[in-house]
Image (tube, rainbow, N blue to C red; front, side, top):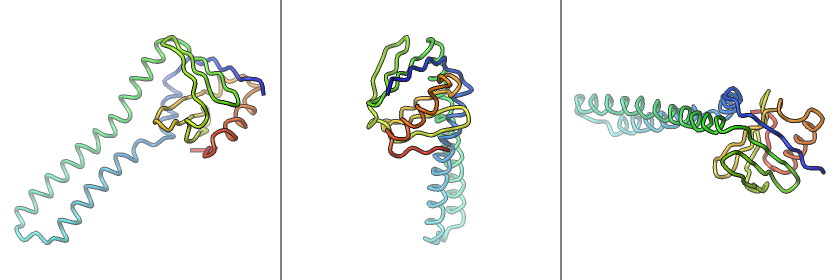
Length: 167
């Protein structure tokens, strides 16, 4: 198969769609679930001093609120700022073939072989390639040559074993 070259000017809209597909709120909910488990254990231990239980309850609820919100904010705002910086450096070029994907930006270039990816997700407007290291490549469908979109989708499906066609 002939390599597929994709020239992308990163746009924040695609990033937002991609990030919604990855659902960072799950981390925040996980932190809240741990806090609820702590409360449950405290209740099972039957704290006899109501004042002590009230203080522990208030502190635990405050920590759940504080860390749950901050974890969500960190997962959304920091990557968005990083993506905005990448977008400000100019276009990105992806070259996809049977062995992997080469990425070239104004900052440098890299080659990632297919085993470096754990899955891909297809949204309405993007193809997301998720690396084992947590790195995310966002490929807007509008930037893929129209006659090569089906080839790219088939290649990704074959190359990344745990591909999921929808979020």
